[in-house]
Length: 159
Ligand code: CA
Image (tube, rainbow, N blue to C red):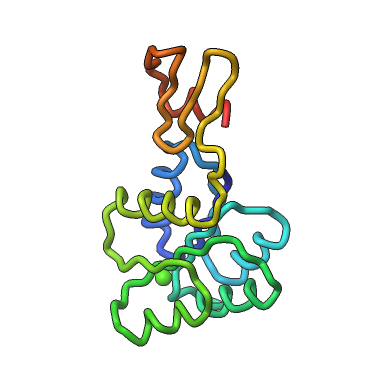
């Protein structure tokens, strides 16, 4: 799973990036809307985390441009402003979900999983090779009936 985080607050961007890497995602980061839009042209991301208030090009514009180009990657928008107008703008721009800052990192992860499930990007959550199986959502690994403990960096080598 490869994702792009577009967020100009570098501290927050790095926290999200580090957290997602720990969860086994491959993560690219952009600090403005222009760079974010540019990266989506060259890389097939599985989902995008897109801040609304961004320099050069805001998240609404980036989202509208992607949808205009028929790019249907799941987009989770972030914003510091929690107004009804902003929510409507984000949804009108065809973002898939909307998270208001500050948020708990676990909620971000849960929303991402929900988005991926909804988009059918996790059609085969269970990988199976012989007696070895893995649930790619919970990241539990089983050998037959036995649960095997793996660190997230060990797991991210394989999926
Ligand atoms: Ca921002």
